[in-house]
Amino acid sequence: MSLAVPSETALKLAIAGASGRMGRMLVEAVAAAPDCVLGGALEMSGSPALGEDPMATLGGSSAVRITADLRAGLSGADVLIDFTRPEGSLAHLAVCRELGMAAVIGTTGFNDAQKALIAEQARHIAIVMAPNMSLGVNVVLKLLEVAARALPTGYDIEVIEAHHRHKVDAPSGTALAMGEVLAKATGRELADAAVWARHGVTGEREASSIGFSVIRGGDIVGDHTVLFAGTGERIEISHRSSSRATYAQGSLRAAHFLRGRAPGLYGMADVLGL
Image 1 (cartoon, rainbow, N blue to C red):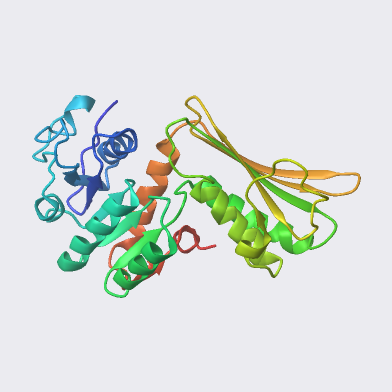
Image 2 (image 1 turned 135 degrees about the vertical axis):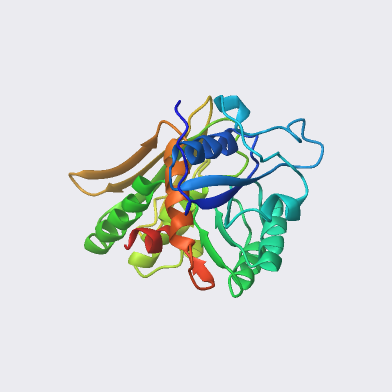
């Protein structure tokens, strides 16, 4: 790939988990963007990638070295992009708050207490947090809201998602976000409407329920389908990812959105003006 020559006003980005699959994709996206530059790269203590130049695998070079020192890794950047694990993201956000630095959080699997901690950090710094940074997925979320409001009764709703064998949380953050949108649009709480699993004699389906099905296997990047099953017809709204590059491009757009933004917790709907 060709590496872009960044402009003098390029946004400086720090990448958490820089040697992982998503981290490498983000580094590649930054390298190809003339309005971005790599300002930092983080990895866990003990990672074999520590001390390496994250640009080297792309045939380029930079002054950045992958580090486990959070303050050193973040001090040269304007915005952190983090697709790691909940505990790591929370540790990173604490340092971002100290430095007055904005953050894009694509990590999933947070529990309610952890989400509350993120909301507290957002009182002091600007954060974009979304279960899926894909621009297409976030457009789909808007389509689901429209469909659910138009079909409040007479249609059974099922959410089906598939991911690679290494994904550790289920249902996916994107599937949960879809469920939240569907429940809110029809005047329900997801916790009350969701059916997470079915086995044995379950009885008839409750009309107000939202069912979830989870597939884990192979190298599936991410497939999501919401099925509205009525009498005599079915409506399916689907999104399929074939590359993590979509998440990387959405993350860069979110990072640009945060430039000069007031403290607060934002979503991709804010980024896209939806």
